[in-house]
Length: 167
Length: 292
Image (cartoon, rainbow over all chains, first blue to last red):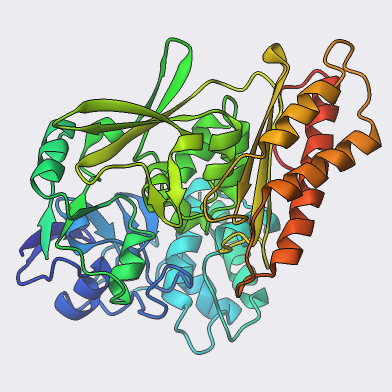
């Protein structure tokens, strides 16, 4: 089947999508957006987290056809714009949350990082100055097997401070 | 496989009548797992996301009618006041990403004995509204909806439209045992609702039998024991007896998540604890609060 939806601000159409195919597969294998990672395929790990109509979801659990006509934003779409704000895919700068993950050393193997960045981004959009408990709750569906999470918490706190300072 | 995308409720019912083998999908948090792992290959997926009628909730004649597509995140944000037990249970579902997509309607469609929404729906006397193009609407009390492991009273040509429940008139609590706070399917779970105006108690057991079920004998015992008139203290012996009767209502199994013996014991503890919280709230004049 054919599926058309907006991804990172641009409308895209893909053909020959299998009806049982996930949005994650379409993003990675048909649209050349490998940032969202494919790990558990059952919603347990959060590595494939994307925005679907402004709300975060595990893209492995969204049927590709369910994205029809909707807006998807992936980790590629969180790159930094020229003014230091979130930009569009193709921008070469890192977005503020991405930057904070690099600076805080919140990345080891990197596999969970894209999902964590999208989910952390969504948290900070909603709660600009989250308490630690709120950060932990927001990231409870994102598994990292390397870091022990402390550096990830540091990164989210750093991103929150940066964001507050910029506003 | 076909992919069906009706945009109205009438079209959805027509599609289901035409293709009874089509598998309805809302948030995909159960359905897509089965498809990703090749555990299920339905002849068609029936995407209900575009059906607006399912996406909201209303108050009709003093009762809540909650569309089958309302995700857990909205139950938590919008319905914690009138449906505190269900909101507590919703908060224990999966992760934020799962709660953004998963819905009570989907939980009902899957009819897993471990589904988190079922115990509070049972305790709160919820009624499930289902509909078919051929026979119209059927209203099925939650207690009659679950027929077996992942089997419900839904006919192949029917879809779940909504669930109905009265706003809480007394405290409600949900409790669940799992290995961590997030991303946990219940080892077992328990919900209680006090209905002081009718001097009645509702209960719901999860992951404790082939279907979610009520503990009717425990409800009747407690309704007669509680000092509704003066809101007197709860006798420790009554709370313990309530726990025993809840345990006796269960028919748990040994599986990878826990043993039957552990489940039975945990249920009696959860029943006693949630009753204590609920009765203390009632004595303090509260209709319920957020879970501790």
